Image 1 (cartoon, rainbow, N blue to C red):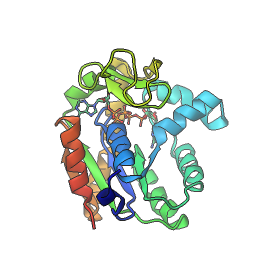
Image 2 (image 1 turned 45 degrees about the horizontal axis):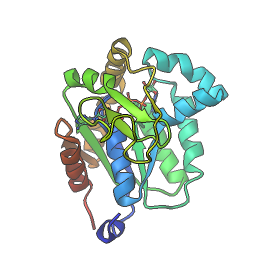
Image 3 (image 1 turned 135 degrees about the vertical axis):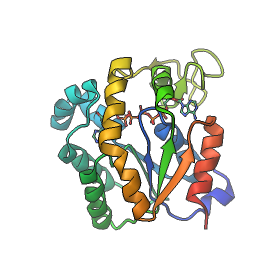
Image 4 (image 1 turned 90 degrees about the vertical axis):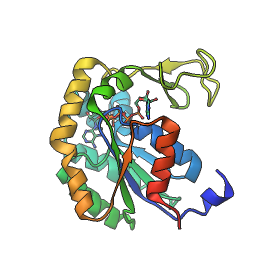
Length: 226
Ligand code: AP5
């Protein structure tokens, strides 16, 4: 993080976009550049599934089908996660909210935790390219860095650029059938939030079909600096 970046004001952001839009990729770049905290409901749910918690047991089959997990489960894990926040540079909500009910719940959670929402960045993409992005994705099992077979391979085959680890994993729900369901859930339940946040004056739109670095520059420009 450079000195100018650390002077960026506190910022709580939502990254909105369909599966494969680059929410996780851009969130991790903002974590590195600005010291923000990434709060990914997908990651929290996968951790709950792996740990076999009651929420994880309820979510497992729903996620495997590519459908949305119930609002009450998701809101509860976000509430629990925000309770551990210690007032850092801000939080990036990655993949939350995804329904009108979750957007209303987020307003209440922000108030409860003494936070405000600064901006909502919509990562605008072409649906047809998303199946390719998602099916080529893999992540480092050690540090979570994300890669893509074609668009973002590791510099050295089989070695993570970030931590030097050698173990990589692919997600069970990154198959053509499930991606179709996830895109359909996005259009039915989540895309309407774009108009909701536009009406609230919070929305910034970014062309997320560009290269990862160009999208990152556009996201930074969209969320601004003091
Ligand atoms: P979640 O884990 O949130 O998955 P998603 O929304 O489907 O999003 P992805 O993680 O697939 O994509 P991304 O936008 O993060 O893209 P990425 O940066 O990895 O949710 C999984 C499931 O959990 C849901 O289906 C649901 O069941 C449940 N769930 C989660 N949150 C929920 C909620 N709030 N409510 C209810 N249920 C919930 O990029 C993808 C690939 O493309 C990578 O390989 C990357 O390297 C590459 N890439 C990224 N940007 C570019 C670029 N500009 N050009 C070329 N390649 C790129």
